[in-house]
Amino acid sequence: MTDADGLAWTRRRFLAGGVAAAAAALAGRSSRARSPADERSAARITKAIPSSGERLPVIGLGTNAYGVSDPTEYAARKEVLARMPDLGGSVVDTARAYGDSELVIGRALAELGNRDRLFLATKTPIGGEVTDASDLIEASFRRLAVETIDLVQVHNLHGLEAFMPLLLELKAAKRIRYVGMSTSRDEQYERLLDSLARYPVDFVQVDYSIGNRSAAERVLPFAQDSGLAVLVNMPFGGRRSGNLFPQVRGRALPDWAAEADVGSWAQFLLKYVVSHPAVTCAIPGTTKVAHLEDNQAAGHGRLPDADLRRRMESLWDAL
Image 1 (cartoon, rainbow, N blue to C red):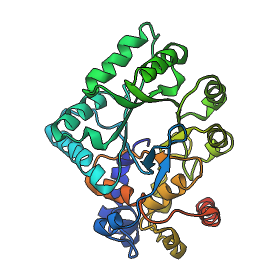
Image 2 (image 1 turned 180 degrees about the horizontal axis):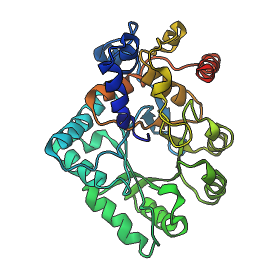
Image 3 (image 1 turned 90 degrees about the horizontal axis):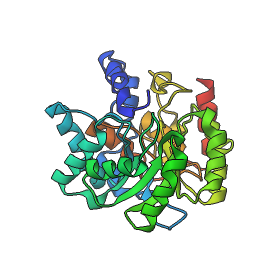
């Protein structure tokens, strides 16, 4: 699945099955894990946006499941947006393609009054011919109910030639702070690399996880060499690798995971991703506070070094 909270059924299923090790790994914390208060007291990990030097927390929030109308579901998502900055996170990534997610986020942030505590990113529409790029971008400003958007990305490179000149104009006018491109498809990497070389963007968003490391072959090195910030979608598995959580069902964390302050399998997966030197921030989809707390804990303490990353890969490949 592409949404970390779309994986919630997996975590609940483990709990319902009564498997203690799986419950510790996927629902709560391992025996070594710390409480949310302890995690907040640990050093928050940030990385710089190369084009500006502005630093971002390494764990953000994906919102492809935020287009809800049910009051209970809305309240749950609003609670996540309220708690996130208190836990040390700031990057909220959405898209016009995520149904009414922009509208829900815009409403929630207006009610919460915490827009200034968040780094708000969205993406251009996908599908269909782009006949008026300006109208489409202005719609995102209205839906999000903001005057400035921190980052706008051309989603899956759709309409790139129509959108990119406009986004660069809006950046010059200071209505958009950063510009980027995104993809979650390996087959687009060749075009992505060519496009990144053609346009002066600040960010690239790509699919990367311990179960799908193909972006590390060319895209991540290119981003690092070119001074691009990297957002990672689907750090818990995507189209190529599938949902990663079932692979650790019933398994305890290795003892050496404590060397990087890893207290759950979610943190294991996230810390692997954000420890890559090119990666700026991972954006796991999250719709519940309990999962938010687990994910945000990965943004504190220590990150795996090169040796520990190799051990993580070896463990994963042997599953």
